[in-house]
Length: 270
Image (tube, rainbow, N blue to C red; front, side):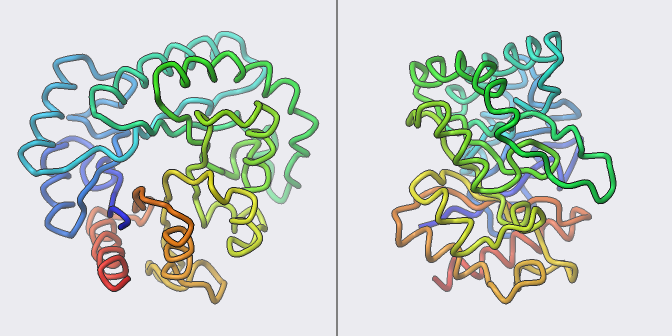
């Protein structure tokens, strides 16, 4: 069955325990750790913070589904920034082990056109050589650590669609340590129909799912399509998916919790 998850920092940016408490009351069984760790980001927490988070997880019987890492959200041509992200990845591996999850969310470098209104998406093949050059050394680290770098398709990054995500994974040799964090709405925003076209590219690779609302701040339908999340989640389950679906970017803390409640109802009805 699919676990109901949410980004804790979008319920509270300063009190991780309060966020977890409210999320559980709304129906969540897992949490995605990114920020809001008593005012700190996941890249900033020390070992005392890690222990404090573990205590909260035990108190509310909640698991960490994914480390909401920013790894790879950087310029592809900035060596200093990339070195910092490599250090971040090493720390994310430590956190994944501490929180007993395999999933580290990551990205495929900034889309250089992201701030140009109406700009066409860049051809990812023009950047693929540099993407592989940068990311290839990370693959054996993930493999040996028994974690997966789950690429989120994101319009602000070079891989914004499922097709582009698959192209990156293919170029990196299809390692089992490279998977998909499928953001259904992000792919749609890039012009890719999520199901069946988008999903066909990442079938068998999805380890985590992000769920954003439509304009009415509801789960269904997905964006301006006629698709419902029941169709997406049922398709994943039929193909063996056993991970979590995570509520993200619903707006206010109460809207986030409403998203959790809506997702809980969908999962319970499946």
